[in-house]
Image (cartoon, rainbow, N blue to C red; front, top):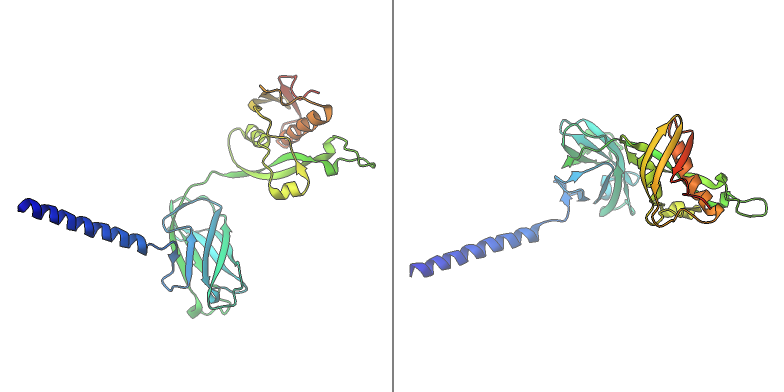
Length: 277
């Protein structure tokens, strides 16, 4: 009898625990909501680890906005401001209903890890009784310092003679900007990024193009001496050869990207048979 009672008790406990877990799952909200119920944030979630730039999404009642926006900021745990920005309404804000918003916020690398995302009710009246904010605790991941570099690609529309013929010259080489981590090897890192050939849709729409990436091509090393930058490549599939126009444009892209760095006056490629017609 005691064995049956034990089994029965275990079954009861299992049912209680299972029911509790199910109820907890059902009651789990897909957003953070302010105590006032006026703001819901779907991203980031409370205590989520975040990096700069931080994408913020949610919805707020129309009277949280003024002129379709409201301020946001990121604080460290001592309330020091690390970043400030504006959230924009994604639909008509002149309503009492919830209105979706989005924002992207850059913030400085924090000293502490804990911090807060603060969504501030826009208060054009300036009256204290109209102030309101919603704080969400977050974990701030220390970010590596960033630098802006130029990657040089090709725009054939800028490289034509009076008859509309492609000249295959440096005239068509144009920069696009990218942010990269600050490292001890900025030239190598930038050339490697160039070789990935990653252009945005907007850049391609502007007529910018590239044949990079080339299958198998990679940069092995880079050394700078007396103004001459020597780049050692590996091209196992011989993808850097071809007609003089093609190889010239491939060459010019790397050369221009390298020459943005202080001290680089000329560029030498190894093996020397690379980028040859």
